[in-house]
Length: 165
Image (tube, rainbow, N blue to C red; front, side, top):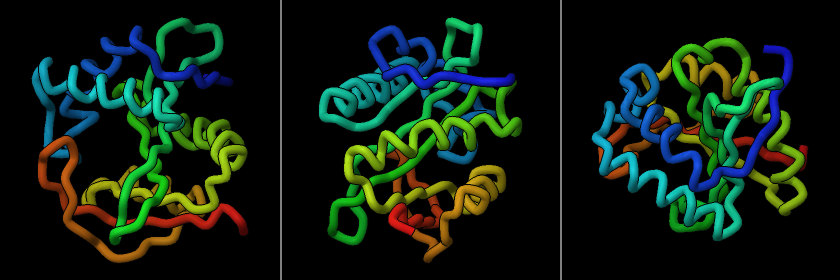
């Protein structure tokens, strides 16, 4: 895949979310796959996030019409203060090909435009690929922590990147 575009997450992306959230290769490090009702709730949360101004985008390869994943920066809370959190998911055929890193490069200027100065990310501690890409993207690892992903407990690595440097 040579290039890509980011397209604002929309109602038409419900099927993508179902495919991502129900695939063990995608969400194995996030507590495992969920059923259609739980995936629909994730979709509704993303739609609400977009409406609230979060940067939630689908990743569409050049020449393609169907998205292959999602990349997002959304408002969250960490240590009793508001933060911006980064996350990405790709369909299995598109993982480990540098796509998430290139999508981040496209998303970063949008985050800076909105005044985001620091990003946090919380992948599962055993999710080697996600932790490795954060190193490549210039994040620094902090403490491990216990969080939940869509109501499922998850031991996470806490990563932070200062965007002002």
